[in-house]
Image (tube, rainbow over all chains, first blue to last red; front, side):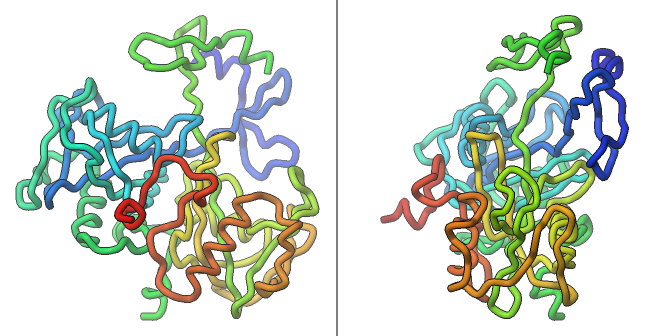
Amino acid sequence: MAHDTARFTRITPPGEDRERLTCGDCGYIAYENPKIVVGSVVGVEGKVLLCRRAIEPRRGFWTIPAGYMELGETVEEGARREAQEEACADLRLDGVLAVYSIARIGQVQILFRAALASPGFAAGPESLEVRLFAWDEIPWAELAFPSVHWVLRAWREAGDGPLGAPRGNPPEDRRGITPLAEAAL
Amino acid sequence: MAHDTARFTRITPPGEDRERLTCGDCGYIAYENPKIVVGSVVGVEGKVLLCRRAIEPRRGFWTIPAGYMELGETVEEGARREAQEEACADLRLDGVLAVYSIARIGQVQILFRAALASPGFAAGPESLEVRLFAWDEIPWAELAFPSVHWVLRAWREAGDGPLGAPRGNPPEDRRGITPLAEAAL
């Protein structure tokens, strides 16, 4: 990105406690922040809706309908838009099932439990195919990302019951949280 | 931001479905995404910890410890860092109490229920003072932001019990979600 490095350098500007991408001409700070991915686990009569990715990364692998949140929308609107785009599916969102931090790549995933608000789905332009899987049919070895594993397990554990507090990263990938229930052990 | 407008324009680049800030020289797209605020409602023996802001916007008004999430941290680490910075408080996070979208300003707030992991707190550099308020003492007219009202009500409703699915925006400011419980009404 020649147009960035030409003018911006990483310095600690006055009043800041860490290095920021700062314009050498005018001092403008280009704050860099984590990006939000919004998505949904869509349950249909006990099966789960998955999309086979038509785009990189992980083309050909299966994932839940999810993608980057846009400016001007709510997290709920974003999750519904992604399902429309990737699976031509009209969702009714139930609640937040999981909030995952992928700190290494500056990403936060806010993932809902959802149902179809109206019947029908189909592959959108970013999907090769969209289909429903019973739990025992899920292609675990062909899932696109670790967090797809995580959230499918969370969805299974939640069953049809009321949602509790959203799941965070699983124990093998967790930093910074100690649920009271665990702290008491 | 002269350095941006000099080279970047808002066009719909090939393969995109909306206008993006795009470099006229090289076609690089500067994606603009919502920013994440992480914060906590800290309960101490039934009282809630609030900070009086020493900085704009809303200097002199009360808020929960919260701020922009940084790259390289998890949401939980961010929430604990903000409490350390603003209230010199060491938190134990319990779970996500609320996820709010302030679409108008491109902001998503992920707010935890928390307790003090070790005793003590004090005003950090961004706070004029930090103190505990019983529910009846909360200075409602001097709260910094609407979402502080929302999350304090959510915290009160949750009581000491297990957290349910996180609250979203309140009905008067809600877009895009229909909890199953409401859909069934």
